[in-house]
Image: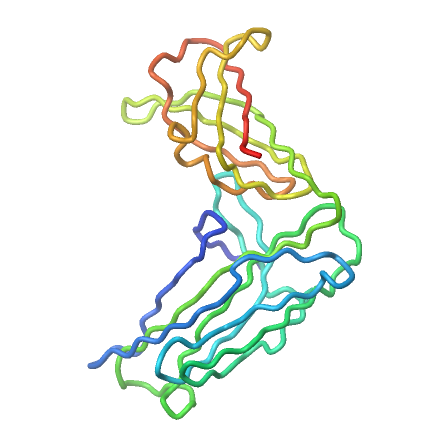
Length: 253
């Protein structure tokens, strides 16, 4: 069964969960890197190393899992259950203060994939008592930390192909917006870096309005997974005409 998480980009997600509230606060933290890696479907590139580091003065436990991800049209991420197509070793680590440990992740799925497969690698601190056991009821507030990184299984020669599917108008609380629908018809994800949108009322004439990254807040810098469609709502330019809108998207190399 899929579970929905509200999140948007390839950035580190940093979650704090408070457990067992009474008296003192004991906060623990760790580092997990790299936060993004690409895997080949087969060969030497089908396994990668990650590293988890205890940056505190207390012993901590960390659990690592890999889960498939897709994006809905509004950018909401949908996670699946832990993927059986990856082997993670070790899956659980107990780290003394200042210690670190390498984590090997191996892709065991098909040796050939036609389209890039997207996953999240999740490193989550597991709360433990000072003696290394699971916490008992009561005792203080203990905070746990969580990293969400990106993992892609990318076939050779995969490329993104971002197309403008449609541009429509809408009004919210008296303000005008454009709803831009983009589709990645390619076989690889793309980050919309340096996005520019050229608008015209006739596809046979030059653009009449050109919008840069500063005009495309909520679109520029976003992630388009392979084969998926996303919708973005951006402020409409003041000099926008009535009638048909044709758009062309340009991205930085």
